[in-house]
Each structure stands twice: as structure tokens, then as C-alpha cells.
Image (cartoon, rainbow, N blue to C red; front, side, top):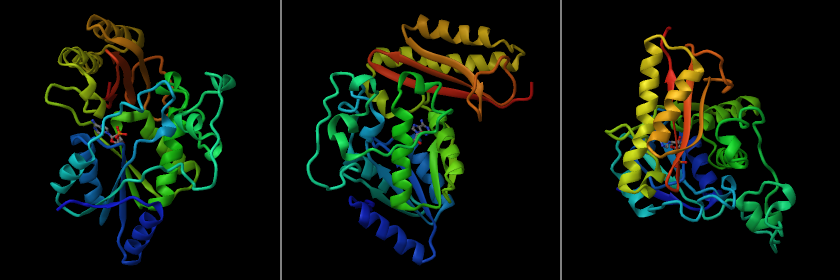
Length: 312
Ligand code: AMP
């Protein structure tokens, strides 16, 4: 049976509170839709951890800059419902709000940002809504590196929308994929720093059979680009194997990965080896680091990572 769909935030909160009053615990899996097995693995885990699970499907304009791919982000809402209806093991509802930045208050102003927001970096929300929303959550240190460098409004938008979802759904536990490693760490830190009473659980990366990390954006890869993009997971696996064999030089490992990506005509955004918790660059590879990659294949920016949890 297809899951119930709730589109209104007040109705969502009412539903959650009704569940809570029946003594049920609530899991939340925030997504931007176009669901794949990676999302579904998080939903399955949530179903084992909580009595009922809310899957939010919302493409958040607040985390895209006006030059990014908001308008072409893939969607297939009816297909998503079919995929969710095939799951067993507990009750799932879908929260699919139309616009979480519409506060229904009068006239909106269009910001005249002169093409650059007067030097400010803008999200699509500010570009379109102007004064509609002005409160943002920033996780100041963790958001700086890795994806934060090339996507300056991204984590501010993510932390803010996740906070809004937490306040609307009021879950006990929320699932985040380690595919978006920095995002997962940022949300964990935000929950700690702001005393949200919510357990944050990280789910392992789900991959295609050939190693490509599942992502909604993979649909935009041509067959040839998709083939070349396998260099990401292949280089990460080879890097991990080299570390297991005793290579501890950050420069050498990074170089090895960059060469494979460039050799496959990928455009490297970053290859970084960082501490799993602080996300700060390390000088030598040791247990407890994560190797993170972002690279473009054609017009698609892909990210992936591999944790090094072996005693060296
Ligand atoms: P998205 O819809 O891309 O915003 O992703 C929603 C959630 O699913 C995030 O917590 C992601 O980290 C997670 N996710 C996306 N792809 C994967 C994957 N391949 N494996 C595990 N989790 C994933």
C-alpha cells in the first residue's frame, strides 16, 4: 500500500504529536526525492530504530546557490511512493511540503542583487524571496572545508532546513547517509551544540554493483560519463588498499587519486584526507581518517568517500 502523504507542516506536526501521544517513537529520513536504494536503506534502518518513520521529500532551495542545479534536480514523486510502498517492517508516511520558506505573510520583495548580491553569497531562497526568510543555522568550523569551499551556502541551507524539519516532525531519531559525510558530521554537531533531543544515526554508503556511489544525480550522467565516473570509487578502494599495505603519505595517496580522476577526464573539485570527526586535514594517514573526493564528470558533480578504520 502506498504511504500516506502529508503536505502541510501543521498537519505533519499534528500527526507526529498524535503518534507520540500513543507512545510511539518517530524516525525521520530527510531526502530530496528521486529515491534510490541508498535512501531506502536509511528508511529500513529507521524502521528498525523507531515505531513509525517519516520520509521527507523536499528539494531545498535554501541549499542551492542561483548558479547550481536546483531547476534540473531530478524528481519522480509517484515512483518514490511506489518504492516506499514495497518496504515492510513498519509504518512509513511521506512529508512532501510545497514550500517551507513560504510564511504566508504578505508581499514578497525580489532582491536586486546586481548579479552578485552586493558581494554576499546568496541561496535560491534569498534570490527569489528576498525578505521572506532571514534566519540561518551555521556550523562554523565544520562547514568551511571540503564541499563548503566550492558551495558556500550549501551547509547553511542544509543545517537550516534540517532544523526546520526537526521542529516540524519532532522525531526521536534521524538518519543521514555517510555518502554526504560532511553533512552527517555537521548535523551531529548541530544537534549536540543546540541540544536537540534527537539521535542522529549515520548509514553506510550504498553502491551500485560496479562501485559507483548511488546518487539521485547519477541519472544525469551519460553512459560514457558514468563509466568514467567509476574512477572515483575505484581510486578510493585502491587508496584504502595502499594504506592497508603501509602507505601513509597523504601527498602520495592524494596524488594517486587525482591522477586516476584526471586520467578518466574528471575535473577534480577536491581530494582531501581528513580526521573523521574534526574534518581537518591530517599530515599522515592513520586510523580514523576519511578520504573524501568531489569531482565533475560532464555537468555532474559527484562526491564519495572511504573511511580508514584499520589498525595501522
Ligand atoms: P539526498 O536526497 O541526496 O539529499 O539524500 C538524502 C539522504 O540520503 C542523505 O542523508 C544522504 O546522505 C543519503 N544518501 C544519499 N545517497 C546515499 C547512498 N548512496 N548511500 C547511503 N545514503 C545515501
